[in-house]
Image (cartoon, rainbow, N blue to C red; front, side):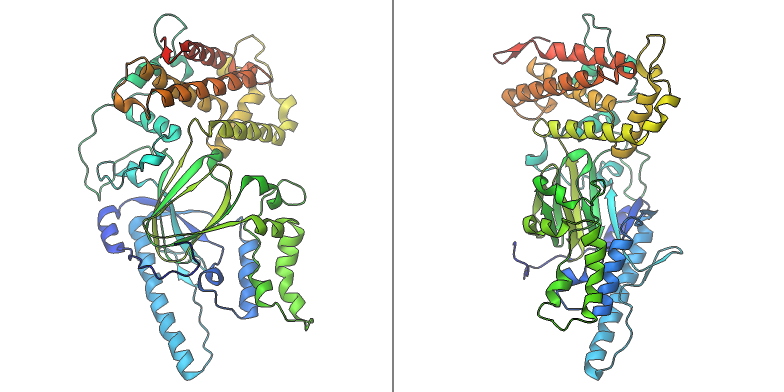
Length: 488
C-alpha cells in the first residue's frame, strides 16, 4: 500500500528467538537523534515539546555516533523499551481518565551498559549473512543479482591467500593475469558448519546488511555509498521513505555550497499553526525552523515540492536509484535486509563520484602539497611515488571506501569474469545474464577503464605508473571482441 494510513497486519519481531540464534554477535547501534513521533502518529504536540524536538534534531545531527555492543545487550535494551512503552501507555490512559497532567518522559531509555540517552537505538549495517554463511538467512532477489560490488568483495573473501598487491598481475606476456585465473577457478570449500550462537571470525567487508529497530527509529538524510544503487526488503514492519531525485540535490546545500542538510524541511510546525494570526509569541516557536534551516539551508524548503514519499509494507522491496537522497522512518517495529550495489548501468555514476571525491580530498590538503614529494624523483611509479597523491588516495579510501586503485581492481575482476565467460571458460554460475549482457558488461568496463587510465595519466601519474599498465593490458584483451566473439 502507498496510502498514509494502513490497516495491513504486521508481524511482531521475535526478539527472544533472534537472541537465541545470534546473541553473541557484535553489532553497531546508532542513537536516532531525529525524533519522528509527529510523523508517525500525526498527533499535535504541545508547542514547547515540538520546539524542543526540532531543536534537538538539528543541533544533534552531527553528534549521533554508533555504539558497539553484543546483540544480546541490544535485545535487553529492546525489552526494557517495550516495558517502558507499556507503562507509559498505561499512564496515558490514567491521565485521560483522571484528567490529570502527569509528567511522562516517553523517550528516556537506558544504554544496555552505562550510557543514558533520550534517543531510540537502531541496529544498522549488521553483516548477518557474512557472520553466519551457513544459516542461509535469505537469498538475493533475481532483480538485484547483477551486483559488481558484492561479487568482487565476496570473491576476495572466498579466495584463500588473496593479495591486494598490484604485483600480482602478469607482465603482459602470453599468460593470463592471476586475476583472470582466479575468476575462472571455483572458491574453496566452505568451512565446517558453525553453531548460530558461535559466530566465526570473518572479514565483513561486503555491503549486505540487516537493519533492526523499534517504531520511531530512523535513518537521516543521505545518499548511498559511492552513489550506488540500493534495495531494501521489509521482512517485518512498515517504513516511510522520503526521496529526492538527484536533479534537485542542489536545494539541500547550505549557502556556501559545502554542506548538506541533516534532514528535509519539516513543515509540521507551520501546518499545525496555520490560521493563527495572533502574532506575538507564535513567532518565537517558528524561529527554530526559520533560523536553523531557513538561514543555513536557504533553498531546503523548496526541495519539499519534489520529494517522493513511499510507504513500504511488510514483504515489499524498494529500489533506490543512484544519487537519490532519502530519509527513512520506521513506522512500526522493523526487520529489513539492505544491499548497496552497482553494475554496468550505474558504474559511470560511481566513477564520477570518485572523481569528485578525489578533487575534494586534494582540495582539503592542498596546503600540504609543498611539504610532500609530488614526484617520485627516480622515475619509479607505483606506491613509491607521489606522496601527495598517495595521501589523497588514502583519504579517499577512508572517506568513501574506494580509491582509484581499488576501483580499477574491481573493474579488472569484472573484466576477467566477462572475458572468461564469453570465451567459454566459466560455467553458468560464472556470471549473471546471457552472452549479450556479458558483452555489454565488458564494453562498459572497457569504457570505465579508459577513463580511469586517462585520469591516472594526469596529475596522478607518479603514483599510478604500474597501475596504468595493468589496466591497459586488461583493456586490450577486452577490445578484441567482434560480432559476439571474444579472443582471450
